[in-house]
Length: 377
Length: 262
Image 1 (tube, rainbow over the protein chains, first blue to last red):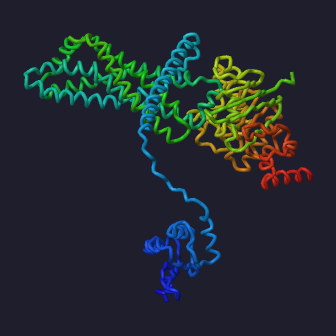
Image 2 (image 1 turned 180 degrees about the vertical axis):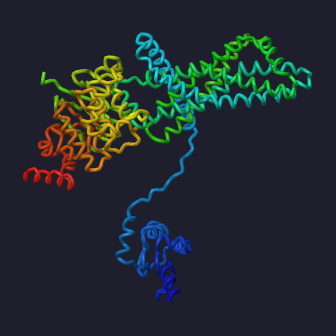
Image 3 (image 1 turned 45 degrees about the vertical axis):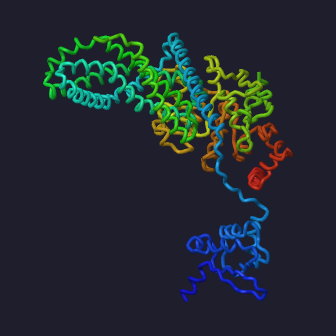
């Protein structure tokens, strides 16, 4: 009995020879998407459908759903076979497909001129980015001029909040990174210097590379990743929640209230963070020089001012201030580009971090070229 | 001076790129009126509202709000004008970094009022007007329910005593009870403070209970702008569809019989 029931549940195909020599295909059982997926009848149907002379009888089907009807319809090459025996209630399922084209998803044709247009659009996009970024920069300068005349409008609260968020709370991570870089620099170069017996030059090497190059770069990259992304996301969220519109409606300038405090704060804290990173990295280098090369602390500190002219520190600090302005402006620029949806929020935040790190390295190269004759002992 | 119009739109055309949004829209809203603007989704209602706020500029035409030309270039002068209009955004747009009290006080502080006791009094007065208590004042916007967010946003929109209030779907996302409360609240405040209201809405109840004028946007144009009774008799196909479907009929008929009994 059970066996009988389960065989009723499955889709079945039986054949019977008619008197006139034709084969009659009889479908029975449950023809639903679920039952078809578990059986092999689907392939059989496709094969049988190719022969157009066969006669079909689907009036004995217990249940036919629209998916199974569609599969049959496809097997019959989008038309009902002649002499089909069918129950009227099942006819409705097929009527839906009659005289209607089934849309076919076509693969996209690769067109080489389209690739060219795509590249052109990308370049245009970059040009537009630079253009809007410069507009933002210009607005910032106008705001600064405005603030000179209206010192009461300076957003002190926002500036101090950003100094805390981007500066004070970044002290730990910059110190850790600085220390590790100092130690590893010192270890690696000590191995080379020992071979030439030039151990004392470890001080020149560490001080020049850290103060002039590594300190500012490391700090800028950490701040770009840490605070730049936060700034972009913050402005983006304000767009999503219409807070930007609310500010505009209240007549509050976005650039004065949102961009300027961030730029000013980073301009102020980047040099300070760089000094902090430099000092910690030098301590790391000094400790490891003492351990590997037996250059004691006193010797190290005495030699330090002689090997590095003080102008290097100024160059590092100037770099830091410029990096800070760049990071904040790029972060804000991408923040304002965010459209009110979650996908755009993620994409622009990524773009902001990538763009600001790239910009930092580019500006650093410009600094190296401009000051190539300055600050070497 | 009573003839002065709160909002005056003349031949407004708006395009988004190639796409036409508004085609030659003109309307005058007199002071003290409550206008409900209806229309299908995507018919440009919110765009029109944003143009009146000054967040977007029409491609052509002139737009006067409280007899001042609206321009895109925002100078200090235009900021002062903006203080005469209060805006309630669809989702409240409360500043998530500030608590309720600071949100409502924000426009005051922007105006340069730093007298702390005065700020406190003004804010508490508005809090009371919109039916919130002092316990709610110290909460963050994320801790509030939808109805309360709208109330706080309304309080912030009203804190500078605006002559014109712009509302973007004030009852969307509220349950029927909260939305009824909101309508009653707005009605009460309108009687007390006598401002002009321009609102974008889909809510037929609000049109019936609150609005003295109804505008209908369809096919890029303003197809009707009149009192509700006259708009209901308009034979435009969209209006027929919008106001004479089963649901709308039920609302209007039910309320008419209720009014008749009262």
